[in-house]
Length: 270
Image: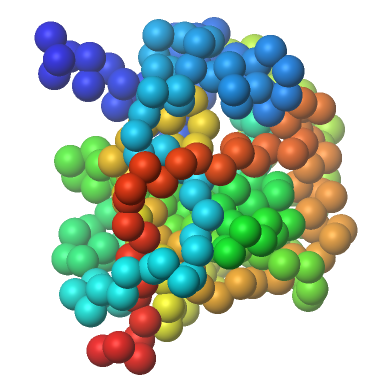
């Protein structure tokens, strides 16, 4: 029975992360970031969401640099992303890009994960030394055994982001599309060049956490890049425009580390 329950949670998690599903919409996607369906209530909205309130490895967390654990055994994040056909989606609680087929691969300490989609949160969910940033990008990867690995990139205000520039016009179109109850609003965007996202990372922070939306499934491998990228104010507004009013600020509050170590990969240590 435990195996069945675990598998059920995994299926729901994958549906939430990788695509719409009418079968789980009512239980799993009926949440927001305010009021009676906000983060403090997620765990009580569905039996599938118990990890949101009872989990011990929840995300996001504050990365406090003074207590990081340097780990020389961590390997560089090897990312080989492809220029792939993609679809821009709005599922009501965030905007993202879903890739047709395989968007490329991520190697996490010798284990391969396929890039499935990326999405944004505004403001950032993770923090560095208590500092919250205007936006955070999550690149979500899945391995053959269905386990998940997420690369997180933090954004400060500055020059326009290259990835968002590629889908600028499509974002405006998406803002006019309404989400139906049982499916995402989607716009085909053609090919998206992800070369900018596979540049070598000299520093990253690693910990094991969870999805940051219900059902808050745990044992997700997080790698938060040390380099903070830039996004323009106009681009940030464009990301928020299509979202439901209760999800325009779609950042889950910080979760307790519960004794978890956050490890540091630093190229200078190798």
